[in-house]
Length: 340
Image 1 (cartoon, helix red, strand yellow):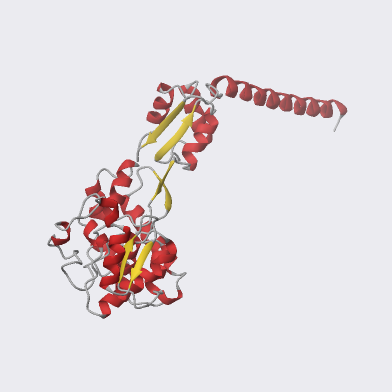
Image 2 (cartoon, rainbow, N blue to C red):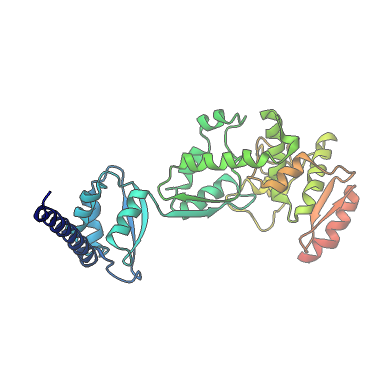
C-alpha cells in the first residue's frame, strides 16, 4: 500500500467522521428548535388516547393543545424511532415543559395518569359506588352495584351470597382512568383475601363459615368507634345469638337508609326488612358494610363475657351492660340527658 493511498484513507475517514459529527450536531440543533419544550411546564394538558386511535390523531391533538412545536417533526420522530404503532391507550398528564422526545417516551411506555381513591372502613357498596363516581371511575352507582353482584366474581371467589358486600377491602388504591370496574372490584376482593392471611384462625376456613364471620365483622365495624372495643362487641353479639336474643343492632337499621341518620326513632326500629335485627332473630341475610382488618380480627377472636348490651357514650366509648336494667340506667345517664 503506497503512502498516497494511506493518506487518502485517512482523509476519507476524517471526512466521514466530520460528516457524522456535523449530522449529530445538526440533529440536536433541529431537535431543540423543532422538538424542544414549548414552555416551562406551567401549562398542563390531559391527553386521552383511545384504543385503536391513529398516531396522526394524537399528534394533531398535541399540536392543537400547544404541547409540541412541530407536528412535522413529531411525526418524523415517531417514524425514525418506529414508535408509531407502540402508542398505548390511556390518560396521560402532559405539560409544555416536556420535549417531543419526552412526550413520545411517556405515551409509548404507558405511564398513564393514576387516580387514587380511599375506601374508608365500614363503607357499604352503595358508598363505594358513589366514591368511584366522584373519582370518575364509574358512570353511576348502579353501574358499580351491578358489577358488585356479578355471578362470575361470586363464583370465582366462592362467596355464598348475592352480592360482594363485605368482601371489598377498605384501603387506598391507585388505578388508571378508564380502568374496567370489574378489575377494580376484583382488586378489592383480592386485597380482602390477602389481608385475611394475617388471621391464623381464618386459615382453610370454609366459605360459609367465613361468610358468617364477615357478617359479624361488618356489624362490629359500623357499631364500633374505638378499635379496642371491637372484640368485646363481637362477644356481645355472639352471646346474644347463643341465648336466642335478637341482635338489636342500630347499624343494621342504618343500612336500610341511603344515608345514615343522626338519630334513630322508634318508628325506624319497626321497618319491615330482613336486615332489621330488632324484629328478626339471628343474623341479617348478609354483611352491612365492608369491614377493615381490626373488625375482621375481632370476629375471629371475640372477647366473651356476660355482657349483653352496649351503648355509645358522648366521649365515643361504649358502656357495656350485663342486664337490661343496667342498660336502661346507663341510657338515662349518658343518652337521655342529651335530649332533655
